[in-house]
Length: 94
Image (cartoon, rainbow, N blue to C red; front, side, top):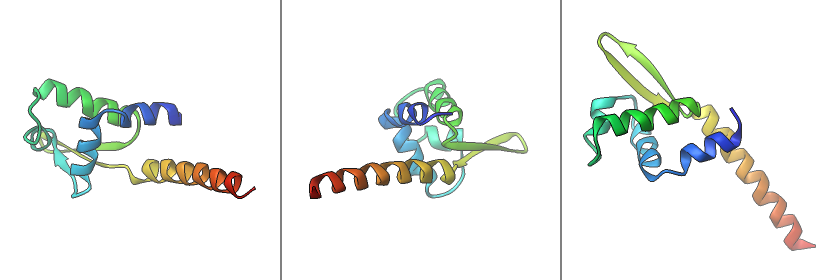
């Protein structure tokens, strides 16, 4: 997956809110959906986009699927952004 795919997944405010929820720890889709005024199908689609972008992982426990952050991809994005910022700082110094 490329950075463009990841940034596209991060562009949606509901998906960003889902990631913020998952900072607290793993959650089921039902627990996540309870925080939003949208349908369960909509949350399922958002989770699918986040999973396809490798921003979250899912793990089946019994009859439930729990979602959690994939911090390594988020770290890669942060490093990329920090590198961009570093490049613009150098340009301003010249």
